[in-house]
Image 1 (spheres, rainbow, N blue to C red):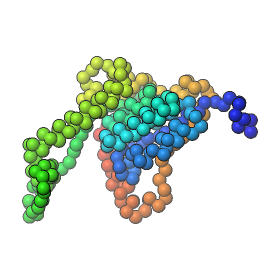
Image 2: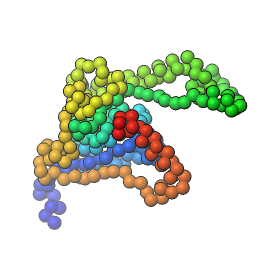
Image 3: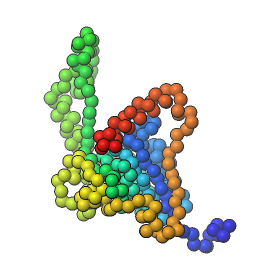
Image 4: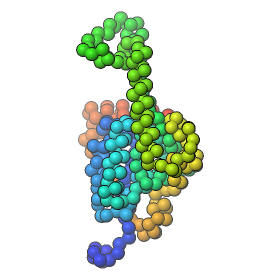
Length: 264
């Protein structure tokens, strides 16, 4: 009862927002639409002393990564709330993009950090359909409308255009990291090559601020009596059935493949 009296000092509270999985628009993925209410509550409920992002993501959509990061930064600036990111298994590619929204980034010594690059992957099936007597019919208005059709042989000009887009996206990624990490970044050309590292090397390169775990680090900063409010997306019971189950199974395979790139 006494703790509810407004003029009594209460221990500081830290909002803990868990961000786990690949980043994209699917039902299982991290995306701005699904996370927006959680992020808003994490910054607004009970005047938190800080927001802690617990990140375990191999990346995914650069647009969703940017939207999530921008929402976090906007609220942090509007409400003057510091943000700390804690990396679990991995914060790579889009996962690291989101981590850079924090004022400080901490990781376990075995965490994987980095992969600041952009990738586009697909399949070429033109030989397969030809072998099986399948004719591809495509009609367009606009000479570039059917670029990179997986059922047709690649055209050099289409590949050049894709690489130009990837280069532009990479430039946005590099600008975000440089703007957020600033002078902490080492003068090392490997940082933006898509390479990734364990925490100690990532710290030497300025990608993170040090090693540390959520509870002890927050106690170190805010005192032993710090309280934690946890925010995490929950899936409804009905999403486990029917077509959603098929979608979730395919998404789980994609997730597994994304983490496997980092040996996880």
